[in-house]
Amino acid sequence: MKQTIVAYIKISLAMAIVGSSVVAGKLILSSFPIFLASEFRFIIATLILIPLLLWQEKRIPVIKPKVLFILFLQALTGVFLFNIFMLYGLKFTTAIEAGVITSTLPAVIGVISFLFLKERLTMKKITGIIFAVIGVLLMNMISGGTSSVNSLLGNSLILGAVLTEALFITLGKSVSSKVTPLAISTMMSLFGLILFLPFAIYEARNFTFSTVGIMDWLNILYFGVVITVVAFLLMYQGLSKVSASSAGVLTSMLPLSTVILSFLILKEEILFSHVLGMLFVLAAIFILSKESTPEEKESETAISP
Image 1 (tube, rainbow, N blue to C red):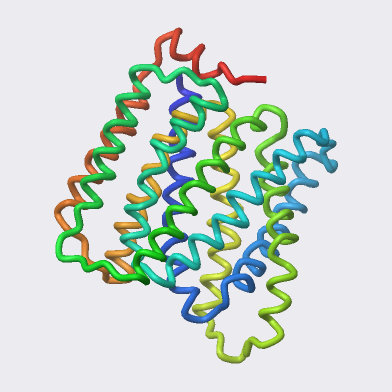
Image 2: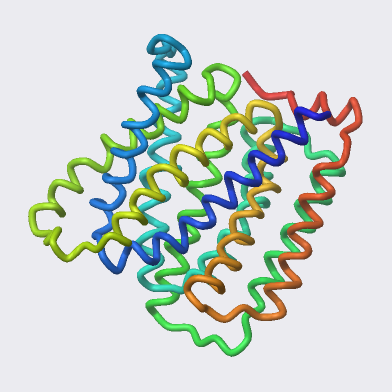
């Protein structure tokens, strides 16, 4: 039980950090092109993780081709496509709107894990998902907003980010017991570096680096160290102990973090509906963190081969 609670805390912290990436991304977009910023992020993360992997595990791990392919798919969806959808989406919508759209993650992951990982949706998980979805609906009740073609495009791109993040977490659960969290995090960063590299080189040719200030470089450093290294490690350590559907409910911390930081840092308006929605999200996490019955524990480890 203690290990499970610790896993819940790690995943919640990881998703809160990912939520902060929405705000940090909004700031970075004012100074850097998308692919170049992402490339710098994964260069920093890779330079940290490879030496850390060699120090901790004493060798480069041998990964089976099937597992390596799943890791690549995970990087393609949750690292490459997620960042493209999220950062381009933020060009056309607010950080708070992006935050509330990402609130659909728990329901999306719950459905995907049920369909593809054959995880049984226990009453506790269903209740947690329902509370998270209620929180989503409440946080989306933004009065006084006006829609436009740009905001519709931006919100559609953020929805694409939700789908790719859901695949990222679901695929991550399928390999979390086969490779160490540190090795997976290193592979994610390495794949990210490779996938963004050709586009980053193209953008760098016409980019004036002299216009970048110290705060912009600090934002990139935060992306590389905290959002990539720390969040990846916390996420994979947590996924090794809980089911994908349980992790899905905990992703509610992502929009919670985004809404709060958007208000504090970007000075975007936070409404009563946001606060009420956040309370339901916290209730969902509390319900999920209650002690599982033996049957629920069994179902949480019932992953299809």
